[in-house]
Length: 131
Length: 68
Image (cartoon, each protein chain N blue to C red):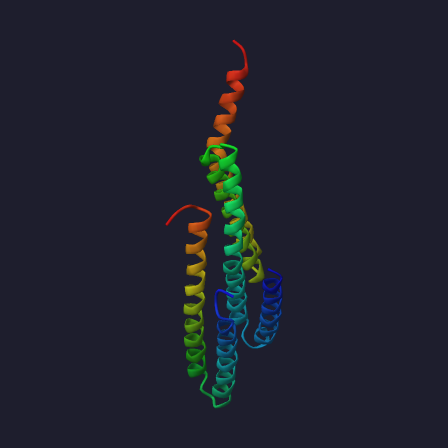
């Protein structure tokens, strides 16, 4: 794990340096380079995220939690990660407006995905109220 | 790393070489050719970027969203 961290830091530093050089010549290429670096680091981290998720799934299985809730939660985490990635890339390209729209879309989709859970919660509360 | 670090150097190299060719062609007075070279270089890099981003999205779909 610690070797991986060193790899990522080295990778990031090299790509930051290359992007710096490229930005003076062709800014568009520098943007694409940043995008690739972001995607590659994310891909690299996904294997570890899978490991963490497996732990959460085992815990949920032991606690006999309905898998639908866990899946919804993981989907929400996924949406948050993707939205953050896209928004940061867009902000890097000096498109703050697009970045904010991506974040807004992420928020809206997260709320929509949480609607079934909210419904269950509200029904539970209503059933608790006597009369 | 999952991907080769070569990809980064390839993209940076293509960028620098394209910038060089652009400058040389501009000095020779062939502006239109210079623009075509830039465009083609950009398309090549864009193809590489699209491949990697596609791979990322496929993997995210399988990990987070339980699709595919």
